[in-house]
View 1: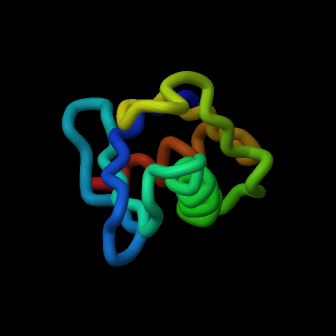
View 2: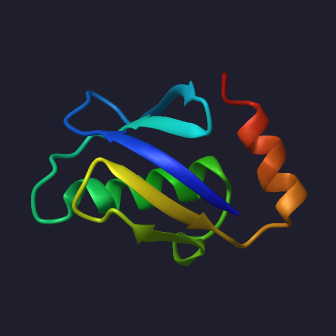
View 3: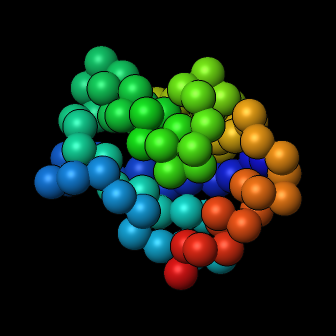
Length: 87
């Protein structure tokens, strides 16, 4: 599954804030320095979607706040159900 993510770095804790259209807004508890926010995003999304870390890959936007992320490691239907839980 491919999703678009808007990352908000330097938060108190990592959490999904919501969705704007098809873009998921995620706060991460890491600074956007030396790839720390990207690493935290991958860790957080792997926990959120219940897949292994290697199942989450930043496909596009590694240096920006808008990212395209590929989620793999579970059936597509299960991943879509998790997406539906995001308000």
